[in-house]
Length: 65
Length: 130
Image 1 (cartoon, rainbow over the protein chains, first blue to last red):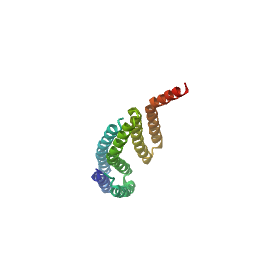
Image 2: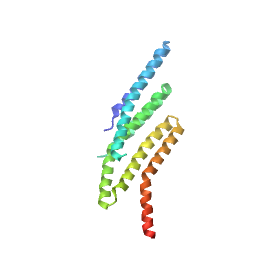
Image 3: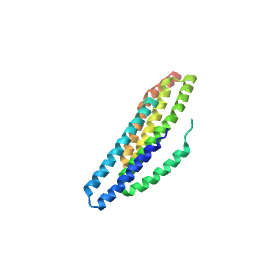
Image 4: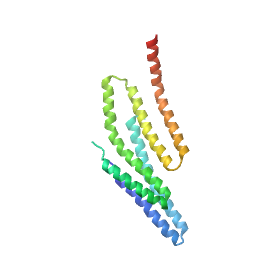
C-alpha cells in the first residue's frame, strides 16, 4: 500500500526542525540549533535508509537480480 | 488491482509544495523528503508491477521462449527502474556527475546481462550461413 504516513512524517520532522532552528538561533543558542538540525536529519535518514533497503530487497526478489 | 492514481497525483503535488517551503529553511530536508517520496512511491508501484511480470512470464513460458531470455529482460527492467530512481535523486540533489556515473554503471550492468544473448544470436547466424 502507498505509505502516505511516511511522507507526512518526514515533512513534519522537517518543518518542526526548521521552526526549532529559527527559534533557537533567534534566542542566541546557535549550538543547540545546530544539534537539533543534526538530530532531525539523522532521524529522517534512518527512516529513509530503512525504506530504501526495503525497496532494494523488493526489486531484488521481483526482478531476480 | 489498479493504481490509486488520484492519491499518487495529489500526494505528489503536496510533497512538491512542502519541498518548496522546506527548501527556504532547510534544503537538506527538502532533498530527503523528495527521495523518501520517490522510494515510497516506487515500493507501491512495485506491488503493481508484480502481476504484470508474472503474466509476461506465463506468456513467455507458453510461447516456448527459453527462460533465460525472459529473465534477461526482467533483470534489465529492474536495473533500469533502480538506476532511474538513483539518477534522478542525484540530479535533484545537484550532483550531475554522480548521476551520469550511476547511469553508466546501469548501462554496463545491462550489457553484461545481455552478453550471453549476443553469443546466442551469433550462433543462430552461423547456423543460417553454414
